[in-house]
Length: 411
Image (cartoon, rainbow, N blue to C red):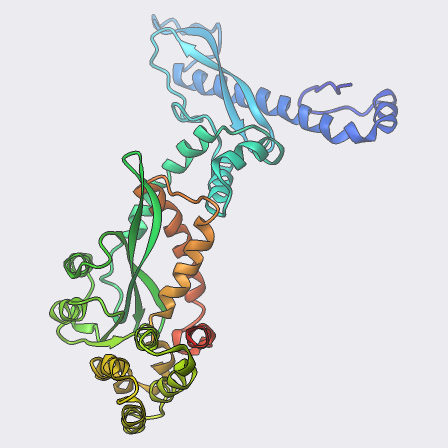
């Protein structure tokens, strides 16, 4: 059963009405088929009109100017449109092969809306195989996993521009530094590859991604190159006041060398983890409570007093743990030199821990990333969504539930 399209209109006759009412489940299917036919007719007509404008005359018309270029028939081309599927389009040709349509780009096989939806499904968690399975139902055309990969490749330019954007218009006062490992295919082998993350906080307390870069997480030299790249992109080193980081040897020195006006804050969760691993299980709760009393003291004087009590209580029983804390205690309390309303955000690198959690959640279904370009494509999508949220949530107003959870888990 099919309705006839006349001049772009579907006439509803008594016969067609009765046919629909006998099998109502096919009504929308018929509409879909007729809309596709209308779209094919309209698109082909538009292309004919475009050739007419190019030649400067209607079909069969003669101008008497000795024109030498003429219409030269058609060739068939498929063009996929969201919800309608593949349209069979008749592409007009001229005899000299000079006509190029501006309506459809050369080699373009999908409309922009369909490509955008494919990208969104992929970035939101669907695998290329999964999109292939559901695309015909949702988009009107089956998209092969190879086509999904090709469509996603087109995003790389825009992603790379965002990832390496100019920073000269931002005043960054704080920077969080850390890295996360992913399983990635490299030259036919699966390797654990680190992605280095730098998050900045502006003078307006808005967080933003400064760097998402593949590299050696444990190399201070790699971080130095990242810092220099940030400055080459316009980051003002004189505005930087604090770097929050873990205990990578040499990273604090490199950071201060590249940002001479800044100080270093050691992540208290990382430090607590290092201290507690040197304590027997029976004492972990008491030692963790002692660390918490130091790190959450209301002033530097109080923190130093709590540290003195901690030192006296555990120096003989757990000298390694006490020494581990003593080596970095000053860097653990740097945040106390900054405005009190920022303290909740400066104790740890947990903004990056949240990012890593989101990265892992998105990539766990994939098990293995296809390569560096694929990693940037996925991670930058997650990062961009997070940054949009951050624009509405200043750092010193966000509850620090994640940090509290981390300390609880350490016990």
